[in-house]
Amino acid sequence: MEGLPIWAPLLIFVVAALYSSVGHGGASGYLAVLSLLAIQRSEMATTALVLNILVAGIACINFSRSKHLRFALTWPFILLSIPGALIGGAITVPERIYSLLLAVALLAAAVRLTGLINPLSCEEKSRPLRLSVAAPLGGAIGILSGIVGIGGGVFLSPVVLLARWANAKQVAATSACFIVVNSIAGLSSRMISHNADFGIIPILPLAAFAGGLIGSSLGARAFSSLALQRVLAAVLVTAAVKLL
Image (cartoon, rainbow, N blue to C red; front, side, top):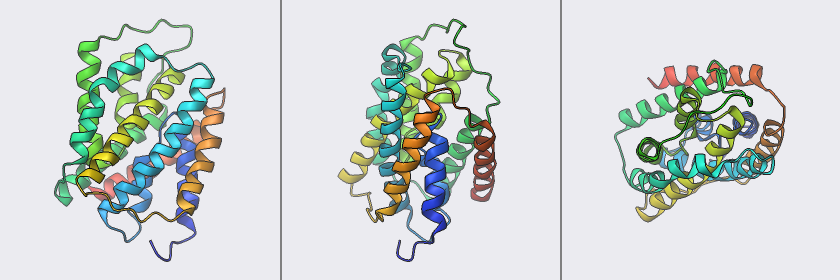
């Protein structure tokens, strides 16, 4: 990453702030930014996972402090997602398939950020979550996330919102926790299988940390960044179309 352009850390900051406001780590956004730079895929995935762990960890703490984290909602998804992410992180797929999976992840993130999914209000009663549904879903997302190099929140949160298992803040808290454990599992698997390439410039984690701290602090409260999220969603759709 020698000769890193100034716009790269600025975009990382913006991505971290907007993603963390809805409980995401931002890996798909980081991959979109890093794809514009002349770096190898293995380095892209490793960098995105490291930033993901940092930002999602901050988001998890902030949403938990604001009493939005529900353990009963979170653990069923995590149960099989960790071994799934370990398996996925050890899988190397052809460039075309990787680009396709990344494009799908970008589109899923765009859907979540547009706000077009009508979330459950705090007054409405959530639907019951069955372990027989949540565990396999978490495992499948874990495998897919491990392959692409993301935490999986972009796949999980739209499903939880559509199924009306929780309100938007609770979904954000669960997604953040889900992303942290899956990102750690995926990164560990890549390191064990010698598929991790560390070439991270310190300014990128610093930019992500600042963005994650600001975004999740505001998102855990009454802040709504819908207009900015929709701008980011448009950027993600453009990147996905380019990949496809």
